[in-house]
Length: 130
Image (tube, one colour):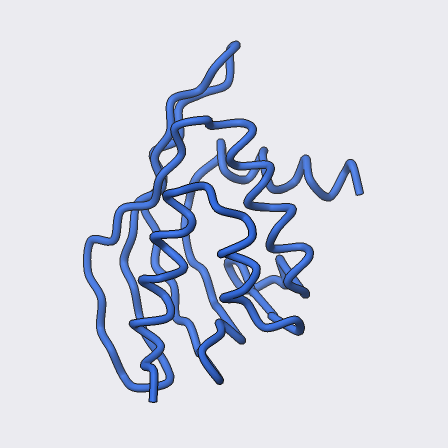
């Protein structure tokens, strides 16, 4: 059985490689993500769009895993999102924490907690253009 930590770390590697196809393969079609207690993403398609927006806004975007606690089908990860802003976009330096559940080798549910205005602007801009 693949642990949630293994799935998350593969997702993080694909994220840092900006590989949208690999990311999508690691996300369950019905993925549900809550961001700071509110529904943020409710499908693999929305996750792909959010990541595409981050990659477009921050061409050097990456997420650094700072700590990880593996609990089988659930993992808790402390991370930091980083990227230089271009064209007046503020730099991204957002610490956060995720509690993620994986099922059948895919991320199925995630709770993200962070405080970062630049990231909020990117993600909220996605909803405005939907």
